[in-house]
Image 1 (cartoon, helix red, strand yellow):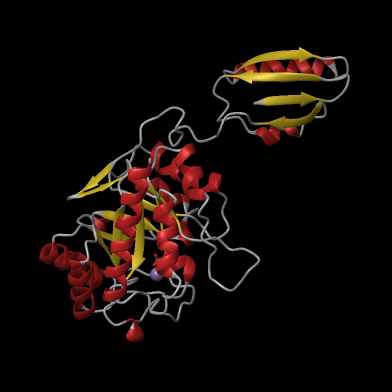
Image 2 (cartoon, rainbow, N blue to C red):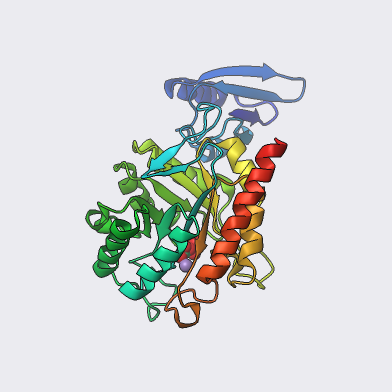
Length: 336
Ligand code: PEP
Ligand code: MN
């Protein structure tokens, strides 16, 4: 952290600032220029409130030079985090395909979709039992019955299962669910993130619609700092000035996040595109950008879906898309 002082700072205030910083365990290296003095702070500044320093009369500006996320930072953990669930390997250059309905709607829907995505080579099955809908009148999921159906599908088809959690009180219901998903709306639900940090479950943490890449990493930090190293970041489209799609898939976030963090980064082309016609292209963009995985909504009968039918692929379209994703990754690994 660097503190830029105003011209001719009051010596007493300056001394007060330096001893306060020293008391926080930070060494202070002043550089006195002809017109400006700057203080270089060395040590763990992650707990220091920049605004407290910026508010002082003698301070012109405060700048962070080190990233505030320590556990997620690739600088301190150069090797990729690789998460294993069942036979699936997430991270470390693999392309993991997660597929299934937005929400578990019925036994028939889930089983038919699970069978199809498994046959098309999906690595994990998704399906939410608890849906925090934007409208309280929309389908909210089957709840415990949805969890029971997911576990039955896991048993039948041997795919690990992913499901959304939005409240820490739901955790006991998820003990046999392999991967927990935190939806975009809950990226900054810190009580939930802290609770997930106390578990060992892999967590897919989705980026909020209007959150920066650094805010996503700071939310991951909540889970990691609690002692759970199994976090998967998910780019799912962000809100921009153009309303023609629900989310603009931030493809650049994939290589950028992967350079900043060792955590796996996956993309969700369904939530971004909002319509099935755009999903294959966005999925391919994610695979080509080096994502560690792609999560795609697939429904056995999209026209009659209770949730996100418009953005769901039919099993046939999913099979074609999945095959093209594998080909893209093969091509890229041959080039590299
Ligand atoms: C979903 O994956 O079904 C979902 C709700 O996505 P998001 O939280 O990204 O909107
Ligand atoms: Mn959905």
